[in-house]
Amino acid sequence: MTLDLRSQQFRSAVRDIQRRAERQLLDEKLVGCFVPNRVLDELDSTSNQLLFGRRGVGKTHTLKVFASERVLAGELTVYLDCTSFGSGLGANGSSKNVGIRFFRTLLRSLADSLCEHASRREPPLDGFDDQIITALANIESASEAKSDGATFDYFGIQRYVNEFLDLIGAERVTILVDEWAQVPRNAQPFLAEFIKRAFFANPRVTMKIGVVDFTHRLNVEYDGSCIGLERAADVFGDIQMDRYFVWDQDQQFVQRFFAEVIYNHLAVELGLGLDIKTEGKYQFVLNSLFTQERVLVEMCRAAEGNARDLLVLFAKAHARFCQQTTHQRIGLDDVHSASTELYRGDKYSNISTEQHLERFLEHLIDSVIKEKKSRTFMVPFHLRNHPLLQRLYSARILHLLDVEWAHPDRPGERYSLVTMDYGTYVSFRGTRNEPDQQVFWELRPSQPDVDLVPLDDRRSIRRIVVPETALERFWAQRKREG
Image 1 (cartoon, rainbow, N blue to C red):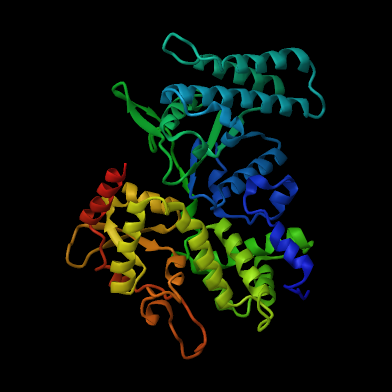
Image 2 (image 1 turned 135 degrees about the vertical axis):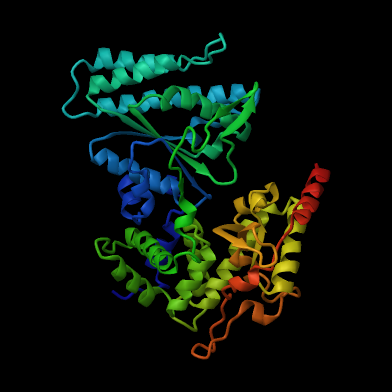
């Protein structure tokens, strides 16, 4: 099939691609455009798990597809979205009281979802109007906080859930909690504590919680003890989604995975076949959408392992492509323009009101990109989650690599690798601050006209260190800003 990338049909398909999984209106469409990944295999257990990942990496899409698969297999599965709990819960009051309000709403949402499941059972359940409704009413009544210091009737919650499972003949229930970031950060440890007491001790309940990296707070010291969820103590086998889609660590997999993401989303809109092998989708994307394979490679690198950013980049690159008539498929300049627009219009704008972050980023640009001709640097391992870095990870301007490194002159000291966003490099093109051209482009004899953002030389990175003094200097500026 030959695609006309300038046709109204194709333009509409690109425009209609839903970039956030929770905006999909039909579950069939959501499942149809999903690309199977290794995360589903890790979720396929009865263990309580935390699913970590940056915004846009695909947590919601994966959890919804996982829920769909479990339901099709006849297993009782409930998906709860913290966003749907409503802004009326607010963040006023003590952190504990905010956590209480969120847990109360979670219990009520759970009871509603279980009621909906029971009402749809085939064949219809006998006695639905009495015993089952009573069990569900008991779960909802348990959402009322107690005043004797115990907060909630945790034993009662466990008993009522098990009664419901017995009545409908289910062995267990899997509860998926998504959009944890919608819970105010200071209240998250309290909500985590309530969830742990109510459900983690129940062997018939499995919980999977989707958590945004670098924005969560799962536990805290309170009244002399630690409350909330502790990894490797309360939760085992947590899943890091980001590590599966890092270009530097598995280029062939990431390239084919993202090509399939693009194909599936277009296929759902254009009515293309989805039941073809990954390699067929990959070749279709290469031959129909891009001038050469290197364009797809650079788009995958520019996405920095983030599926939503990939789709945004594709839409922006296509819009740029439609503005010219020199080539019939998306080219490298289109990808560079798209990555610049994404960086300046989305990522950088998220920190534009925080002067200390702007100054720190300028410091990195001067000391790493301009001076060292690199976009990757090292930070002491114990500082890899410094608040300053975390804020830039969250904005997707910096990316923490799952790699430990050593400085050649400091044996025994561990360092983490951090890379600056692809768009940071490309956004300098055509400005007075543009570094030397060789920083951006690697000209190969076989491809003399291809401009590339180069891959960093890991040996040279071993001497590029952002020290603790630099981090603390700019963090102190933040404190002065208030």
